[in-house]
Length: 171
Image 1 (cartoon, rainbow, N blue to C red):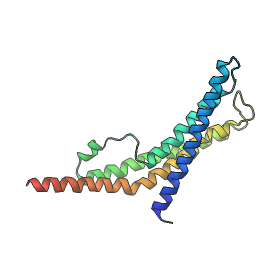
Image 2: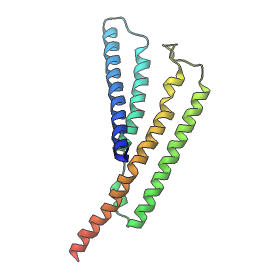
Image 3: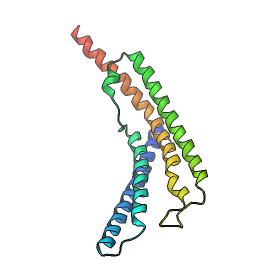
Image 4: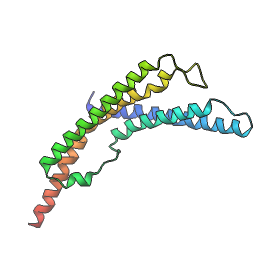
């Protein structure tokens, strides 16, 4: 399997998970609103909807990272010479990886601390299941960032090549 094939499969995997999560959240909210409107509010729907939204946000961040859609300021990076761009590129990836590794590690520690706790309204749902989104999505985010490295680096080099060609025409 090629890297591109793996990336396409991983992207499809994230899309399916996000699609299922969005449908489940929409159904949950519609059911909750319907029951509340009828005067028979469900005690659990607010808590479950907030958990679903958090999961959607975390997994969606991994997908956004894979697509290169996270917040960035490429115009600042473009203002530096190629050598500094490369240094900043490596530095930024190291900072991102350090943050995500710490997030995964401490997310796992939280799971060990909350063993035995459950949701308030659904006592059969363990908090470890709910909070497992943090270390799992951190690992998915790391994978997404790793798969982006070749594209991000080639964009960095191509930007420089394009600028040199355009400035070369003027002189």
